[in-house]
Length: 133
Image (cartoon, rainbow, N blue to C red; front, top):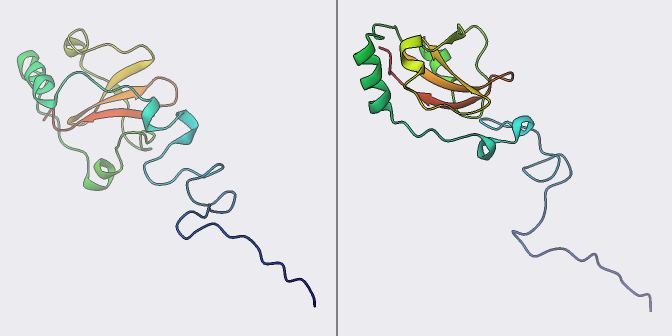
């Protein structure tokens, strides 16, 4: 009688994806992920709310900016690079002194949105929507 050797399979639901597939080791960045900068968890969280930032904008007269076109606005998100074609402008000078400072980050205005980006890579850490409209 021949000995029959069967492969040992992990229980259902515990199998690991092949190398380079899924979200295991070697995964490629997917929608909203940026493994090159350490991912979303490596980015700072801001200590200012949209309402607080809006109050600073109104107080300093930094309003009246138009919103980005819907396609560009939709692609502007935490952990993603600043989309190409969006004007990269430092936030209004009157607001910069009143906004929280984070080493290695810079506040920029993207039309009516106030955005905190990583200096150099322009990875978006936070988007405060409609602060400058």
